Amino acid sequence: MSRTPFCPESERPGVIPVVHPDRPGYNIRVTSLSQTLRRIPSVSQVLLRDPVRTLLEQHPRHLVVEEIQSLLEELRTSIQQKNWSEKDFEKEFQHLDLRIRQRLDERLLPSLRRVVNASGVLIHTNIGRAPISEAASRAIAETAGSYSNLEFDLAGGKRGHRDQHFEARMVRLLGCEAATVCNNNAAAIFLVLDTFSQGKKVLVSRGELIEIGGSFRLPAILEKSGARLKEVGTTNKTRTADYEAEVDEETALILRVHPSNFKIVGFAQRPALADLVELAQKRNLILVKDAGSGYLFSTPHPSLRSEPTVKSALSQGVDLVCFSGDKLMGGPQAGIIVGKKKLVEAIRRNPLMRAFRVDKCTHAALEHTLIEYEKGTYSSTLPVYRMLSARTEDLRLRAQGLNDQLDPAVFEGEIRDGVSLIGGGAAPGEPIPTCVLAILSHQLSAQALERKLREHAQPVIARIEGDRLLLDFRTVFPEEDEVLLAALTSRAVSKPGQ
Ligand SMILES: *Cc1c(COP(=O)(O)O)cnc(C)c1O
Image (cartoon, rainbow, N blue to C red; front, side):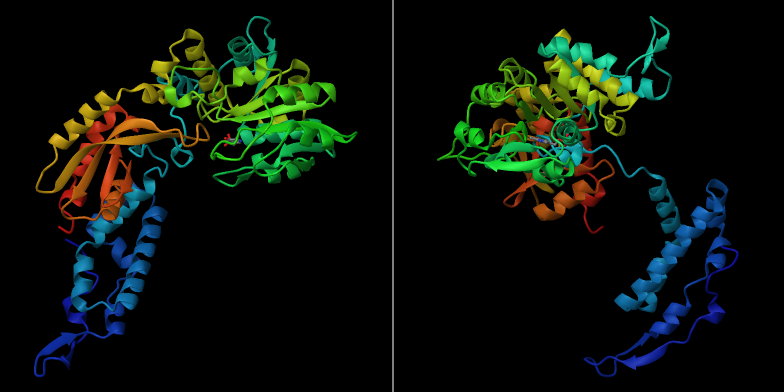
């Protein structure tokens, strides 16, 4: 029981009888707004309530006080805006202690949490791109919580370089001369331009001046690096001669960009990579390829058959290739630069490299990702490749399994053929056949259902098609099927409004 009731009976404001306009003679009693407002207790009164005293034993006082303050503030606003009656007020105040506890619990919960990806987009920037392998995750945890030979040469007992862990592996894997790594591909491109083309001209095809979600705009990065962008050709057609016509004393570099998230179809053309290699060699320019997704070498996945590989760009003679670590490579967020030794070393010496270097956790995860490639186990251990190669029949069984457990009084579920996407700037428009569970709720619209799943304790990200919610099992980890079930059978979803 509360020792100090926030509003003792004796202090209750009087109620003013009014006449209901539509029903003459039918008197209802309401309090005025200011009277309702006056019933809001003070923070110190709330602090004396027994349940709140218990909270004070568990949490720092300032935390409890802050949450009470903001809760009372919200109440005040609600009363004013929604014109609360005394009854609404009573109802809300019954739950005062509970609300404070909920607010504290929520405040102490991490805001960054695991979500279930039922969207069917494998590499989705908004939900963290590629999940890394189990070995890489374990390596992150271990490296983060301990000391390591990050920059220490154990054999020689002297200072080492953090690139030592990853460079030799990358070089072996791709057959290139050298490799280095920075925070992300945007930083990699910036470092390359900053190192080789400050104040000089960089040639880029008009059709490749791309923008990538999250405000990465190639021209903006170029400009920041101090390079002078020279656009060549037109949006749909660029020929080798267009590049050649622009080469002069001032020209340092040709940048070839993988048009990662769109496709120009129809009357379109750009030079073969080999032609650019030839031109760069003839005119003594550095040829750099922004390979975007980091598809290292060919894998037996039909949806990736037309995706250019890093290895082939290198073997065709491109001087430097840069790409993201957390897209198709299936590793941690990183920008990887591979290619000619002389050039990579110049980049490594750039003082800005210090500002863009990656931490020990990234190095740990990178190395473990590359080990999977070396061992040849990547297609079963890197989640992106495991998802890509999941058989549609197996996905169908899982979809069916979930559907069988749903209450037909609440949902109508239908197993359908569908399409997953790689995303993350790879194979734009290249569909991957999949199997989806298309759900119709008898109580909620598809939009409302989508929102409830997103707001579930273990959030589920799904997509909507027509009046149905689609769950694509290709991007759901098998052990997460039970989360889908829990979300769909939760009170909020199966008994909304109760
Ligand atoms: C994704 C992408 C980038 C940006 O890479 P980040 O690692 O996000 O910085 C740059 N270029 C291309 C072609 C891309 O696909």
